[in-house]
Length: 248
Image (cartoon, rainbow, N blue to C red; front, side):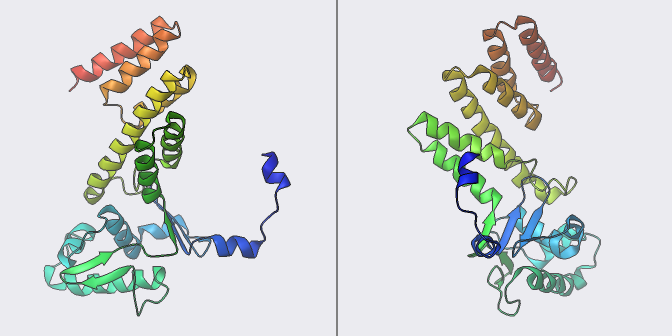
């Protein structure tokens, strides 16, 4: 903390200039800042922002009006789908595009609509994936560990946790959960190799909370507990694993 106190403080104008125009966090409940201003969470249950979530859940994929209508209001008469989707797309553009009349992120393409972040943005999912790729490519174990842990710091919770019942979120949610667990397992193994038993213990417990169905996590947690001389607790974890497998 000392370097923060001794270093020069940025002015409010410098902070505003450095901040991206659009900041999106989707690991956990959706959080958005536009030009540095946080949008109220209740806004994200409106149709334009639910459409935004739909695009986040299907990165780099063209969404047809029919697919959008089926996801957001499945009981709508198909004859009205294209017009209603067009209205909601227009509303979303007004909220996220610098110029809704010349959209750069949410574009009309052959077959439907394509969303792609452009310059002046920050998206936690992209950063999360990039950190894990960089850690995977590291030859230095310390640097790899730092990368995995930095990625896990971004994992605030399930992808778009404020859409717990939306089927269209599930594929991306499962992918990101699995990616977090894999990064965590690798980080745990590195911590164990470095003799950091308490840190690995804490990490494995967190990973079990993310994915309680992964038997390997119970194995590693029990092994660490046993290496610390906590045999009874290790046995409890093994019993939990057996119960898990019996329930499958």
